[in-house]
Length: 179
Image (cartoon, rainbow, N blue to C red; front, side, top):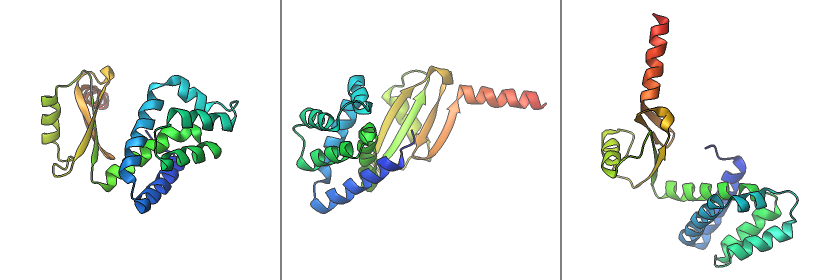
């Protein structure tokens, strides 16, 4: 998923502030909670995306939902909403998480497969790949996509290994068409 420039800029500003104030870890946890909360609630997504609802109402609802958060996070939420960027709130929070993980040397890895993989299979795929830096920590996200038919697609950062049956069949089809 491409992240907007808006999300990157807000996340970078928040990261700079939290590094100066020394509360990067607590805000990191809260940003994770924001992502999960918005991701799970279609109603909340629609609420923040609605141009009809008043800014003051959006601020009061956001502060009520996230009432246990630190003043820094609450201020950031207010700023995002007052600037009319509430539809980007989840992206901003996710981008903040990504920036903190990058700063800490955590690799984000995505494995897409046709069916669920066991932890042993995931471990074997990661061990066999040169893209994975085994000295660093990594965060593995598993996606199931039956359209790839079999095999897997491993994505580490901006690099990808496509070992799916669908891509192999597609290559074979092109070869037959050329010959």
